[in-house]
Image (cartoon, rainbow over all chains, first blue to last red; front, side, top):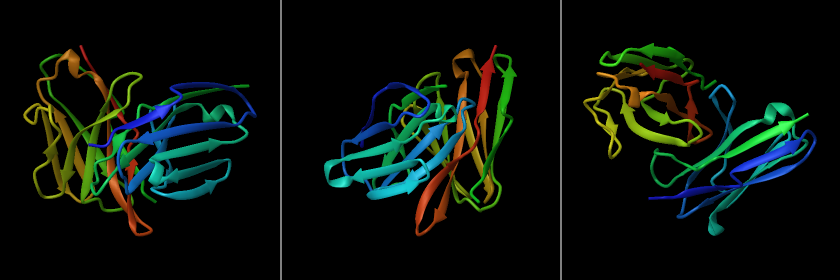
Length: 108
Length: 117
């Protein structure tokens, strides 16, 4: 099955800094989602992006399916961006395979 | 739209007892829901797929007699942890499949933290 890896595992930023999170997947995908898990455990949908580029406010994401990776960009970080960012992928199935996550801490 | 709730948010039970966790899609109908388990500082692991009106499909290594899943309506799936033991302590999260813009996304409940003493 698909394997999903994320990097870096941990990221510490000062407020206002920009960051790039990476998600590599081992096989073709036709479903890729990015989530933010807040400190209380709730997963929040950020992007559904099996290919192409999307932007939502300070966040944007790009998936290059042919090269099997996706990037999540966070600009002008805020303390509320802290938490764990997961990507999850699937191919011809509803079963999402989650990556290992990137733990982000943003300090004022 | 696409709001998923879980109840309870936190539960403590004694070893040997059973605990039921509810997962509801509040503003849409969900023919398919999913149950995940997450240990501290780890990723989410899929336990089972819950389909309305039929038996759940369990992932390899998940004991179906221990984790009973019932999806009796288009808005409710339940997970019952039977004869709970301390090693069952974990964060349980459900999700529901939601059709938007021609594709399915999964939306997640807030999770249930189970502690077995």
